Length: 196
Ligand SMILES: C[S@@+](CC[C@H](N)C(=O)[O-])C[C@H]1O[C@@H](n2cnc3c(N)ncnc32)[C@H](O)[C@@H]1O
Picture 1 (cartoon, helix red, strand yellow):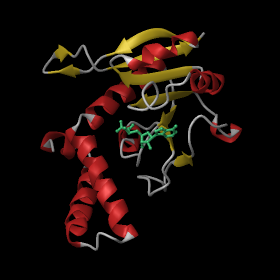
Picture 2 (cartoon, rainbow, N blue to C red):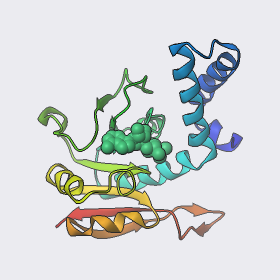
Picture 3 (cartoon, helix red, strand yellow):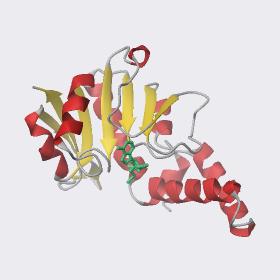
Picture 4 (cartoon, protein in one colour):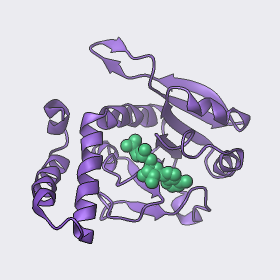
């Protein structure tokens, strides 16, 4: 894992240290082992597979665009909520898995197979949906995009191709690119769409 990135997320690093020691020696058949192992796996992706650095680009984009609340569709355990927390943004995670979510004492998580009706009380403030490795890939049917467009006028999707499927319901407005070593990366970006 990148130590440089880990330094920016001390609480998650500490959680990883605790559970990764524990899950190596614990009874593999227990329920407790499963959530610890799946947290460790998610954190390895967050630090090691560009999760943190991708979501940091989303945070900048959300702020630049003037939104204050994000719905993260396909949030997994929500470790990336830490990026939004650090930036003072409100975060609501959506996922179809119900196991323990990160920062669930600070943020709400809506559990279910999206699309579903998001209760009106959550649709407050200036909100935008974000999604990385879920909308466009795992949520990919026309009827799903249609229902998403009814709820979310603004969406920000991280991918390199798939979100073009959304264009029946949304117009592409701008692209937010990650800079690495001072160079713009061309292949894995955040695409900001606005409902037609
Ligand atoms: C590949 S993971 C991506 C996690 C995170 N967004 C990231 O970038 O690391 C996809 C997540 O989407 C969730 N997911 C897939 N289809 C979904 C659906 N229809 N509704 C809600 N969550 C879904 C999966 O359970 C999983 O947690």
